[in-house]
Length: 261
Image (tube, rainbow, N blue to C red; front, side, top):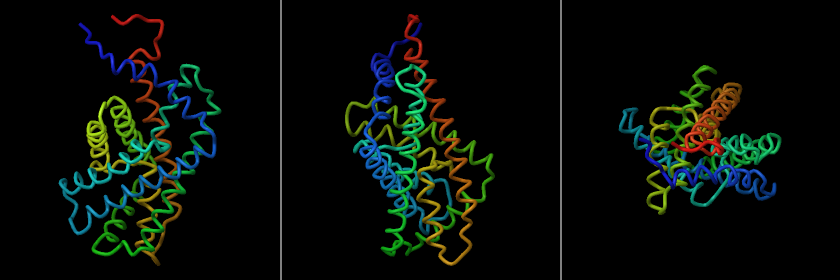
């Protein structure tokens, strides 16, 4: 016997139109909100590194770091900024015919670049502010080195898992009826992906530059950083798209002509 979820069904039913509306936003608005989202996620990266500073690399430290990083996505969701990884779910309105593939790709590219700009601004300002003291710089270098050492295949697979969790956090927060519930809904999945060391392209836009800036004068491994962003982005697209389609199908958003048994 199936148990119906009226709230979940309603969110799924309205998701294609809502995501299509986001994709059709005016370009200046989209760019502004994308830059803000990149900055907010970079703030999450910063506080995550602060949580790791001088703490070693145990599981408890990873969980604390993940909980700290989740503040970045909380700011994105509460303010209503435009985050590329969440916007990978725009495949849902493309599937239903509410959005063209061309407009989706244009929105993705615009938001990705805006996220990158916001992330870099915060990373450079944090370095200029002298934020690498008390072990924060060492944590930044260690985390960036770990990411740059991964193979392309590992980054791609990791990116799929990371964005399944991030998009799940976004979807769960849409179901939350209060601000505290929204915060809790976001924290859990984000804490998992950070603690597990998974690859989130927008987070990496600040984490990797922070590592480079903290290791000023050393080999910056620019090529490895670019490859990480390419393959984490591709993995994030697959993970977000797969989750969106699975949820949409599960809640009948993609099966409007079928009756629910």
